[in-house]
Length: 429
Ligand code: NAD
Picture 1 (cartoon, rainbow, N blue to C red):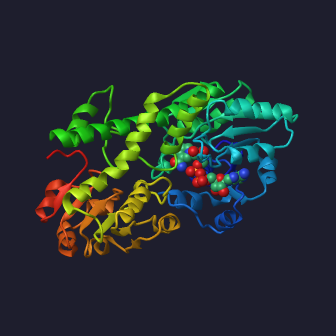
Picture 2 (picture 1 turned 90 degrees about the vertical axis):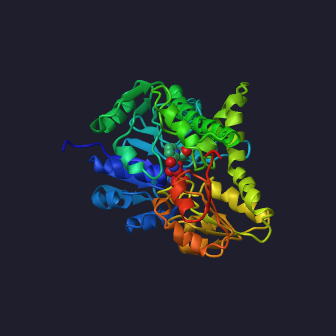
Picture 3 (picture 1 turned 45 degrees about the vertical axis):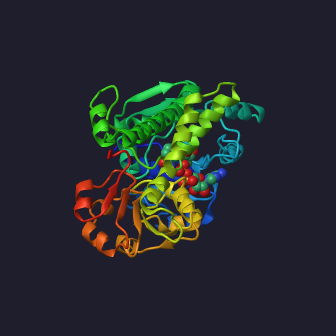
């Protein structure tokens, strides 16, 4: 293998760790930096702080090339490209919180041979303001590249190694070419553009995907009123090349660490510059209402929920991750408790994270325990093990007979054959 450029990765969360392991796999020495001492200590001892399929193995395989530290100078000493993958969570105003990004920027020295490569999702214009900051502090020689990340939790390793595209926004200096060189072995379609456009590509992509989800959820709600089946409708729509089948699965709404905050940040960015992004307001509102629609379905069958036992299958915002950020289960478990229901829940992986965010519910050790004595069971996260459930067992354990398939992931006939009442999302009468 030709010698590969060493890199630094600042922030060892979902994006940082996957990026670090991915580039180590491609042959780079990677200097991983985080301010969280216990995380770094754990990583030094082979403890991977997140659940992501294939990540532990990839890090194990490339251990020799991965170096972990809390000291940014370790990265600055060995690498000229510093990939930034710190969090950019939402603030109360809906703007992205860029304090972690700014802390990284402030810790950069005067240098004419380093570049910050922004993987974190930041609003368009952030690169400009960082470059302005560099200029004000005598660091105008420090290069800057926007290289937004598109990986999906649950398939992040695969997404790194086989990206749909790599987007690089730069100022036509050495740094953009060096980043392109690093990604070259992946042979992915490459978009070379300016920094502002690269930043906007990320936000616009997430906003479009969120719009697609809210759109199909609204179609599902109309299907419920008209008797059509949204699964059939989505199949028929998705065969149109211009539409495509992905992101047309109706359900309980989108969550996670990206879509909700990125859609809001784009709406806010538009608002701050005087433009009212009407469509995104609706996308957000539809999603909020969608998370709550399951309450109406429960009440339709059970009447008042006071004292009713409701089981939740799955808590993570989607399968194959332990990420609980903005998960629909957070809203649902709170709404159910507010309506007087007892809630029992099981998630194969996310329980530890869920316990930090959800109070007042029982955590079960499996689907069987969720079903035990339940008046209703709601599928919240479509983990494979729930798709393979023995519904006769579920029916046998439950006190009631209502199964709400919040992700349209189950076979309605199999559920009904077990003697249960099936309610999906937009599945007709
Ligand atoms: P995360 O919260 O999992 O990880 C962020 C890490 O950065 C943490 O380990 C934190 O300790 C560390 N950190 C914070 N401040 C730091 C500092 N000053 N120096 C060093 N380390 C610091 O976040 P994430 O989910 O990996 O997301 C990171 C960025 O990537 C966000 O902007 C997010 O929007 C974007 N993104 C996330 C995904 C995803 O699926 N998670 C996908 C694409 C883009």
